[in-house]
Image (cartoon, rainbow, N blue to C red):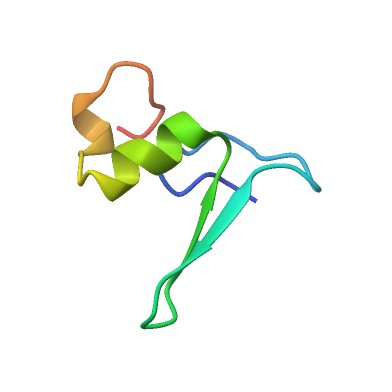
Length: 52
């Protein structure tokens, strides 16, 4: 499984799953990714992400 924000691989049994009211599921490898996603930041503009 891959992180929704930075596209890094997530080991099974780790990470965080965020489910929106509408039913959309997002997976995050660390809280840094979750916080940036919830703030509405674009992964392409951040150097530390693999999302290009």
